[in-house]
Image (tube, rainbow, N blue to C red; front, side, top):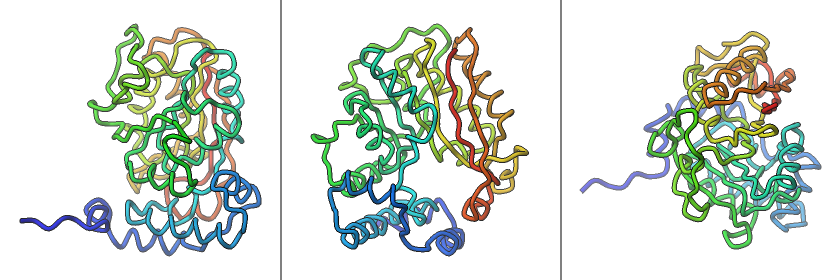
Length: 303
């Protein structure tokens, strides 16, 4: 009988230990939340005393590393939220008010900090779908924010976006799925149904070819009506391609715009595409990752 894999053995089969040690060395500088992050955590986790709150976050982080030691886990990025700072978020909140039953997808949601932020700002939790490759991160999110499926009734689905059994391509003109959200088993069941998609710190994990494929897959999930949006932030560059030496691809604004125009055209959108994107010089942490040099905040809107 083969012994069950330990948590470390699971991720060691996918990433070199020396790479992880470098990630830890470059990113494990302790938990140093901003005032906004602390306020967000107090509101969600319900822990007011700062020392107790910090200890709580560190304890959950230590468990998360055993699931998969992403640099953002070492960096405590999962305990902060940036969704409200992106233009597409305001449009998303407006869609929730104007479109009956408008659905929001947070793809690559990790612990679900941005999901909680959206709920705090008024987006109905029962109209949010969250998805990540690792279901354990969502479970840890319940621990971190001290809520449950009953108190945070978001639909969560674990899966690989490049697995056709989880997210398949949909030819232009395919009728929108009518599967009740309570019965949805995969992202494919959401073709043509999403008013808004949020994807932060996600696309830069992949090659250029994979990002192009992913944009096409996500575009097929949108409601093809004026006002539907895709938005997020990620590592980028002034000159695209910086991270290709590590198997990743850093887009610039021009290449990012072209990719989404093509993806939406392929999904059947015949109107114009509004792109609001800006580059901000990356921190030292961004540079050390070797993917790109800047952070790009972006919103794609059907016009």
